[in-house]
Length: 288
Image 1: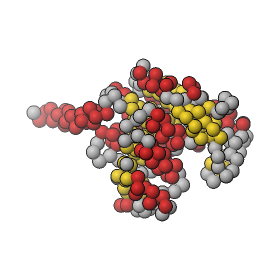
Image 2: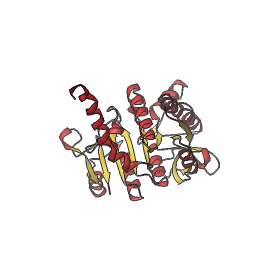
Image 3: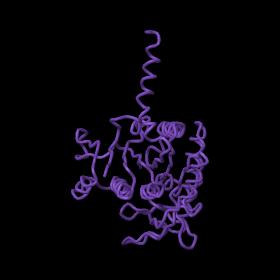
Image 4: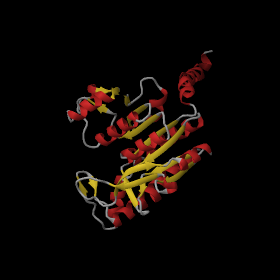
């Protein structure tokens, strides 16, 4: 028996995962990837492997990606300086052309290629394909140009891909009423798509572990949060800046039918698998 111990241990690990496989079999899980996990080569590879594994055990992963850093880099390469107002990119016609080129033509296809390389069947689409994301101009205090809000999600193109056993990879470019492209916040797009697909989970990959009661205190990490508790953290300005749109997207998803939402560190190896298939998880789980 001793000679088989290492293999028996591996078999026991697989059996520990069985209840989670049964629980989520044939379910849809929406995953948003952005920031550092998208530019770190090891993190990207681990992400692709996690997604492929999910598909092969009977889960339907749907991926939405960002690409802010890549857009900024391309703008500078093309001699155009990015302009931000309160952290939001001012997106004139030329900037929108660059944005769509980067999101749909470069970032999207990079993720598609990586997943396919590791044995998946990924297909990249834009929010403009199949009228997936209908958008309207963002109604903030400042005019940001072609920055949009989600008006409606038409998920038929995604459900068709899932039915044919493909993994949809979505770039957050919306379709305006006149056929124009609009830049949509990827966290927001992910939450709206999760609701439209009746997903069981929304997972947002970040470069931090999750939510803390005290940002600089590792011991204050929160593994599980209710919506009411999050509202208090927002009011106290504990949840601010880049974490705020992620948390607001999670709240929207939960209030509109998604069972659970998660904010996790995409730089942790196989963080998605750890979050879905283990009791403890690795990030912050948000529940109703």
